[in-house]
Image 1: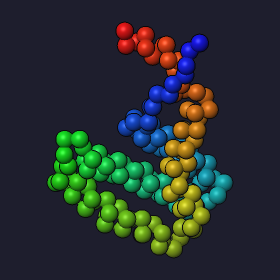
Image 2: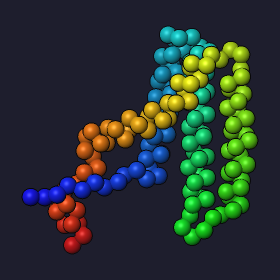
Image 3: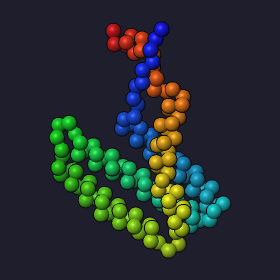
Image 4: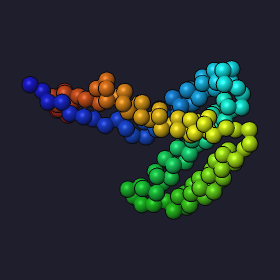
Length: 142
């Protein structure tokens, strides 16, 4: 009888795969949304989704530079923080205050990355993609 163990595949490649999937979903839904919901609602959704993707890119880069095992790269951390917080959140504030953008498409676009992450993680769990037999994992070590 073999025991099943979990192997984790939620590394930096998980963020990259999430960003690629989000980009594809944004492009497809922007094209459909412009036809069915109006151009400005689709543009608000698309702009908020792009903002969310850029935010995730900067957040992952900031975490990687600030939490290195060999020590913090203070210059890179400061530069990323100075770009991320005032500029990126200023752009987010601009998105929220534009008169022609309604709030609902903005909220949907902002939460799209989180939804894609959740669906990717749930699909890996439901399909047992991270479960391997213990004897299979020990064979590779011998």
